[in-house]
Length: 406
Image: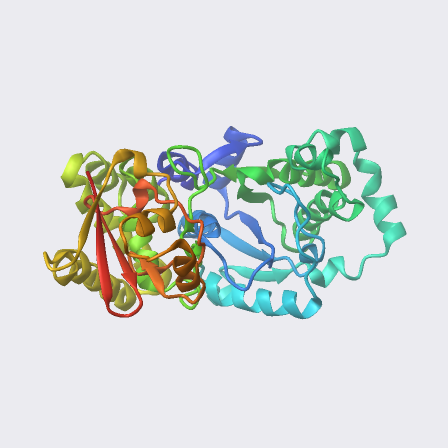
């Protein structure tokens, strides 16, 4: 069996690693207990978490034991990484509810039978900590100037970084040490925006326990232009079918940019890399086959085979049958229309009698773009909204319109 480190590297997961050769050798010689943390900031995981779950699944398939850490403790503080403002404070009830939702979703990807994986909550130890003991045991190993050099804190420095959030790195480092003590956890994995926090835990274990520990980050899920992947007209792309229906989920991947297809096939499916490269090499109209495979495989992993089949059939009916009928009013958009507000384009072509009427319909949930409800009246059209050069707009329950790229 191939070393899972090589598998992750070939598929494009690995961004940074504290000791690449050391981690590879460790994964080759023993069953390694590793962990990834999930802070309960919402009642569903989103597509960014999905990439982490895929990395964990590859690790488990390679013979290693995942620890899924839900942040019942860190969730009370909030991670400042990637934020320009402070996160909303969650109640204990919110955190408990969100953690329980996460557990159900994670179980779709990770096998917890026969102690093959663990699900733990850092609230079990963080909420019991004595503040003075924490300062004495852990605080002495952190320097303020080193912490302030971390990107997560630098980006917040001018706008104001609360002391509450400043403790987040200490708490995450303590998590790693606690998991090391309880479960012999030797490796922490996370998104590349967690690098500073992961390094803090690795160093704390080495200083306090005098034992080796390692950190590895995987690439963030971004589009070819560098923007985060997973934003739609309806908001974030959630793994919960109630928040993002399987059809909408399928359509998102069916409509991604050509340049992102091969990367997403490698990261978000279990297709062999030979097949990934074959599909990714397709160009022009032929790339649509690769997009259909991607959409189907990703939807099957998240929502199950039945939901994927239904979503695929719905998309084919919409874009290959009645949805593409010549009876549907069609409007041609010029290249300069890309990036403009959808409401402006629809008003210009008379689909809305006025912008105010358009905003009212959107607020009432009466407008869909490619069968996804438009919730932002200021949403701007982009290339990802078009499949085979076409996008479908529905106003109310019966009025359909087609937008075609020139």
